Image (cartoon, rainbow, N blue to C red; front, side, top):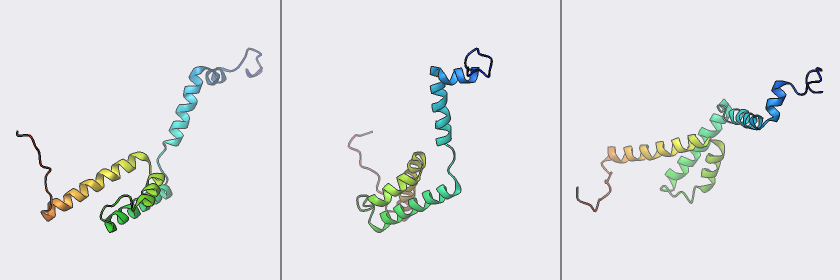
Length: 113
């Protein structure tokens, strides 16, 4: 029963899925499905949320607490790796902006080299 009518038990594929390895395989396939590339609509939503968050930061002198609702929207619409990338990108762009304007002040060290 369950073996393709042979009466010898489940098919090899079914036996694999019922084994402890099957649980791992099911998790792997769910993970692959979940980690697929975002659609065009999802990418647009992510970029839009990022732009709104960055605009809020620009308008509020980088006060993250004022922009928390935009940050939450940004985090919920973008993959975590993208959020990390965009955060690093913003830090770099702000650093570059200060450097080009001659406003960058390197951190002061207390140790002598």
